[in-house]
Amino acid sequence: MITRPSSALGAVVASVLLVASLPLGAHAQADRRAGEAIPRTPDGRPDLQGNWSNATITPVQRPPGQGPVLTSEQVRAIEGERQGFIAELSAPSDPDREAPPVGGSYTGNPLFDAASGGSGGYNYFYIDGGDLVAIVDGEPRSSLVTSPADGRIPAFTEEGRARLAERQRLQSRFGEYDNPENRPLGERCIMSFGSNAGPPMLPNYFYNNNYTIVQTPDHVMIMTEMVHDVRIIRLGERRPLPDHIRPWFGDSWGRWEGDTLVVETTNLAERQLSEHAYVYPGGSDRMRVIERFTRADANSLHYEFTVIDPETYVEPWSGEVPFKRLDALVYEYACHEANYALFNVLSGARAQEREAGARR
Image (cartoon, rainbow, N blue to C red):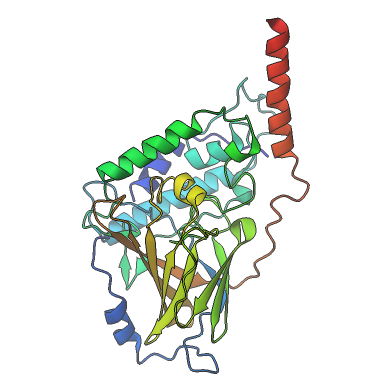
C-alpha cells in the first residue's frame, strides 16, 4: 500500500522531532507512591507483569534551545499536529492517481522512506508510533534523555571517535550487498529495529512498541514485540559471564532496591554496539547500562536508564520513559516467515555483477 505524500509532512515531522533535563528521581517518586496500592506477586514484590507500551512522540534527544518540560500550549500544538498528520495519511488514496515516479516517491519522513525505499511499502494503517507526549511524574517532557542537562546524548571521547571510524573503515571493505552479514540486523530478523529491546529500551517511533513482562522470584523475562526479541534477567547474586561471551542484549542481572527492580547489563555484543546508531554506535566492550523499573500504579510503569561508558562518552547519560499498560494482546512478530527479501537482495546484486562483467 502506498504512503501518500504530504505537503505538510516535512513541517509535521520537524515539529515532532523538535519535540528533560531533570535529575533522575526514582527514589523520590517511589517514596511519593509508597502509599498507593500497586499489584504485588505472591512473594510480596511489585508485580511488573503484563503487556506494556512505550510508544510516544517525545524524541530521545531534546532539540537545542528547548526546556526540559513542555508548556500546555506546546503540548497542544505538538499533539494537534500529530493528529493532523495521522488524519492526512489515513485518508483514502485517490484511485485515479498517477503512477509513482521512476526511482520511487519519497515523503520526507525518514522513518517511512527508510521502510519503503520510496516504493510505498507502508501507509499509516500499519503504523502505531504513538500520538502523545511522554508524561513523567506529571510533567510533559521534551525529550526522553534527562541527563546531561541539555537532554542530549553526550559527545564521544577521542577514543570513541577513533573506534567508530575504525568500525566504519572495516565495514567499507565490503559492498552493502556483498554478503548477508553486511545487511542490517533488523532486516535479518536478528534484533529489533532501533533499540526497542535495548538496553536501554527506547521507542522506535514507527510501530510494535509493545512488551510482555513475565516475572518469577528468580527471573524476569521481557519479550519485545519488534522482531520478537526476548531478554532474560536473572535475579539474585551476580555471577557474570566471562568477558568473551557476549549474547544479544548483553548479560543482565537484577536486584530489588525496595520496590524498584534495578538491572545492570554488561557484555553487550560487538555487532549490537556497532549497529544501533543513535544509541551506541561507537560503544566500547566495557559499556554498562543500568535500568530501574518501578511500578507507578495499576496502569503505568516508570522506566529509567543510565548508559556508562567512559571509553566512549565524555560523561554518562540517562533518561526516563513512561510505559503504559496495553489493554490488548501481543502477537508473534513472524519476521522471517515467507520472507524472501534477503535471498532476493543478494541474488539481484550477483545478477548485476554478472551483467557488468559481460559488458566488459
